[in-house]
Length: 252
Image 1 (cartoon, helix red, strand yellow):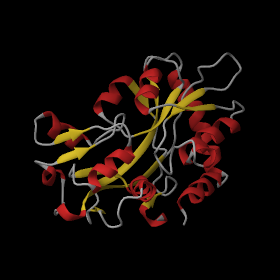
Image 2 (cartoon, rainbow, N blue to C red):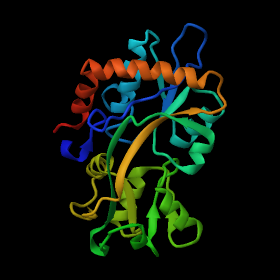
Image 3 (tube, rainbow, N blue to C red):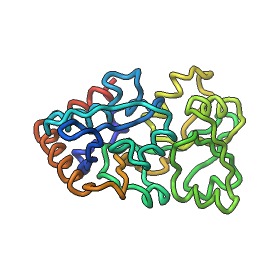
């Protein structure tokens, strides 16, 4: 599994972060969501890989962060309304970029196209999705090309409440496609317990997907908070701890 993860320290990627929304002198409060292994889930050790990275950065800064778990859409909307310092981990979309500042990536991994094994088709690029039904749970982003195809009717989107629902729908042949990073997709397929081999991944990856921490553009002090978080992450990376965190969640 590790070979499919693109470590941030190899690609020269740097984290940015968010300012605190708690009382003066207290650490920031962030929100994330469930059902997104290995990055974020309350059942994972330390709440997942991305949660642990954010917490450790703020511990190094002397401002221990609080991380809460809410349904993805609720957490996203409440962050936009300044109820939280930020939310993570998210991929970039045009809609999100209008509302939020994006950090440098927290992580990077292969994004793949999952399909029902009985209805598998050759995939080489987004045009091969034309006429398909794509499952994408509420609060999750889609590649920009797929968003554009949905807008002009070339693909249809089904949006259940959870990733597990998408996987069950795909296994049953009720949808054609699920696009997800391989780490999360493979883990979720195993956890959902669908029939072995009923869901397969296209041989050609869709892209390399990067996950970010988001912070409301209109929040006072956002740029200074990002610079501070960035400095903390640099310390985490230089110490080798970032490597150890990634290995903890991705090595077999």
